[in-house]
Image (tube, rainbow over all chains, first blue to last red; front, top):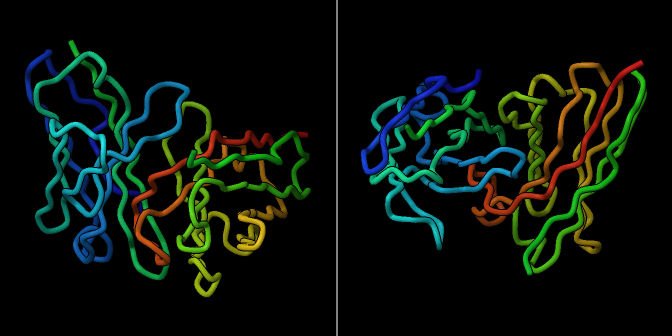
Length: 109
Length: 122
């Protein structure tokens, strides 16, 4: 089953926001293989967090990730206008299967 | 330059077949697992299938199991998705993506193709 994310979140420039991603004991709860993606309109997704809390080279340290039990979280600090995008979480679910969340639309007010 | 180039999409009638391709360059293709991910218009990302570096292990989403077949040719640096018995609900932009976890499957896709559009309609 798809991971559960809020449909939308919003924040003002400079503020911090957190996006949650709730799965099950068979995916998020069992593996430290949670990733987060940023997708701007009509663009391919971009990996911003992997292995729960690691950042790929070149990704701002304003993006951070964590996990507790079956729920993972993405925090964006110091919100900027360009952060406005859709954000997706994903998790390995065993047996060479991956699941995505339904996505969260971030609006920067 | 590290890149993935998708091709093979198009308009197809329900029940027919289509084969998607993904050409990789700029990295050692056979060191990494690969994936297909799709996105219907205005909808979220849906993982479709994965294949490990040596094709030894493969996974499919329930929505495509038994109809789609993933494969790779490491000599040609290419990934494929054979789609049979296509349904209207398979209409989407299909991306290939590189796993950053080495030869095995994780959930971290660090390189994405540009996508190829598949439209299933009569």
